[in-house]
Image (cartoon, rainbow, N blue to C red):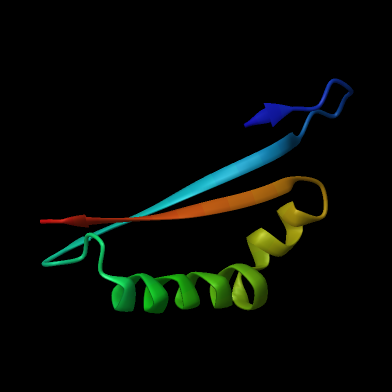
Length: 68
């Protein structure tokens, strides 16, 4: 995360890492597709915080699936 140079300072970039753990999650394309779709809906449609931050910051995310 980077701050702007001028005041009031705010984040220029925000990168969120979503990590999920479960049985046989790693390299499971079906689970990755479902998790990514749920995140996209939240990120783009339902999350008020994301909507507000998107107005002033460049936001990105990644999804990591791990086995238990």
